[in-house]
Length: 505
Image 1 (cartoon, rainbow, N blue to C red):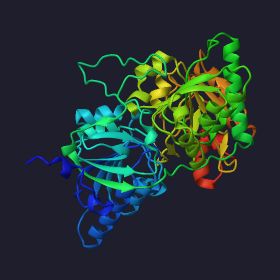
Image 2: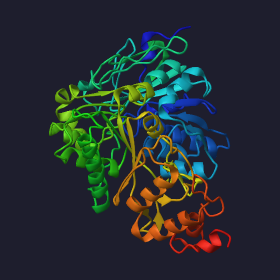
Image 3: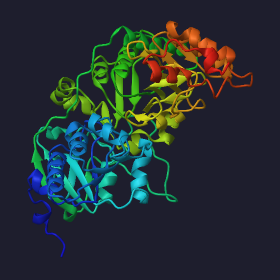
């Protein structure tokens, strides 16, 4: 018998909601990064899992999210050993440890492809969607909070929905979301976004109230962390990016009115945007990106960013308070969209995005490793960097030239894991300089990257490899390509490679 309207909007505690979920089921969660992710039910679900394990009963669920979440979701479930599989992206230390030890199965996905993978059934049956909402009406109309992720698809595909009604958010968030799902092939049409500010979808998610298993009232802020002030290295990286883009304007390779910007997550991205906003030759610009960070809010207030389309507001508590305090002003300057739109290749290519993302390491040819330390230990996941890099007008990767206190060079002969290949990466920038790889063959790329991007203490090693590598078109030697990585594994420092031994002499 169908649930009545009253039953559909039943008030539940977090524990009552968690006990509705059964071992072996697949649970999806709204949000994107710390923004908009459920907070109470996942913690209660972790407690349920611990109780079941202590009683000798199995309890593990499949977990699908928009991107990374928080310790209250990924951390709580990982510590309870409650996750059987996880996709598409994570950044929690406890979950990362479980993945790298083989306790949790993780498969990486380009974030733009996740919603359609759910719709097509590639990820199996979706039993539950747990959504964080700022408002919900008796007829099933849901206003999301600070992040969207894949919430519209999760809500539609799940058998049942649990709503965390978070009273921390102002009701004035209504109208800041632009929610749209493309039709499935062969009926899919073009997505009619021709500038970042175009609104094409609904302001809310609408579902059959009979699907709502219950509402859990909460009052949690997002777990956004403050960003570090730029240090000498990140500040110089930012300045190098800004000056490169200004030079592209002077060379007429970027139009005077500029192009929309996509920027990744983290302290380097914040520093880069800050430098761009301060450069006198870079005009006010718009953003079409997956994450809005603190620097964007500051640039909006200074009229340096005129509009931002995003998937989430990944802000520190201070920056979030500033947005909430003047939400009517910000509502006309930003939209939050599902990741299927924020990361959509068609739109990225059409708008001509300049994309700026961060690498773990880059090699002589322009290949970038975004995800794995030493090729085997997962860090976070590919996220949206592949969506943006492959389809950008200009794709830029940034990183400091060294890591681990100078013991690791991030510029290597061959990356230990390839996420973005040489055909898609156009520019590499470190604190030492810029390597514009467009129009260069492999040997020209290698020389430019060593000269402009590598740390001076590692240049002799890199030049030694390059001078000894095979004489073919691509300077690659399968015996010596990972000599620097091997040196670090053996000694804890990449300096001091014996290149005669590395090449087998």
